[in-house]
Length: 332
Image 1 (cartoon, rainbow, N blue to C red):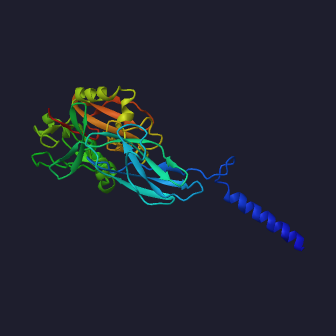
Image 2 (cartoon, rainbow, N blue to C red):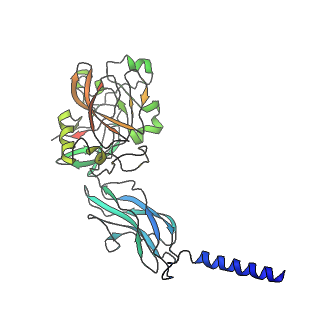
Image 3 (cartoon, rainbow, N blue to C red):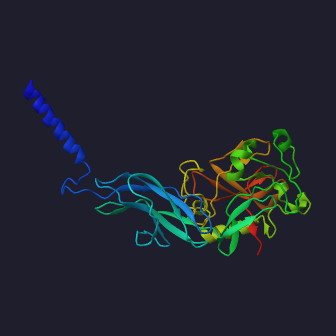
């Protein structure tokens, strides 16, 4: 019996040694560099952003430094700008500061042990150009695309820039009968959608012929025409690929697969969905729709539409009774 236990102990010891050596290179017996991933980029502003990473394997040696590094060219390393965010494995957050406005940056997480420094996957983001405030006090990031300055967030105002109110219409039957300016929040849920997706407006709310000559955008800004949408999209690519360059580049707000999304433009398009002319809501998480100020027929107007499963931009139209998002464009 003692001999049996002796062999069991030897076997257990061998298993323990094998387990402790799993992180070693099978040929050299040396520890390996850490394994890690880069976290999502959040809270982008004019001069800062938040990123981070997750170190899931230290490679057999303690991680002695970790953070993110960034550059305006691809494949940044720790000789470029970087944060230092503690030691060890697991998740960490990195505050990226000192950035230049309206500039594209490549970023990736790094981790260093006694063997080497490893890097997570590379991500891209573009800083904003500044901010603009509407009559309600909502503050929007702005982004320069080509020679024009666009809002990088959807409009949230409940008033025109002369302080006149826009009618909030929650009831489906009233929305369906509306031929005057109106707005709503998706699913009539202000808390869930105002900050993230902004408001949904019917076309009468932005049409000066219907709203008495009022401007729904902040002073010095306007709802873009169909031609101005086309100009912007042509600057960043074409209808087949520009959608990916406009969409926020993750699946926090967009449902998977969010095809082609890179947000290379900094436009940060979100899938706010829409409201059909009969008053029902649809598409949040999958579709983003934005009005232009260009009328198509007496009952419809032009817009642009993005989808989670396509990288294209669709130049379509909607009934003037539909509810879509608005992005404002600075006057020349």
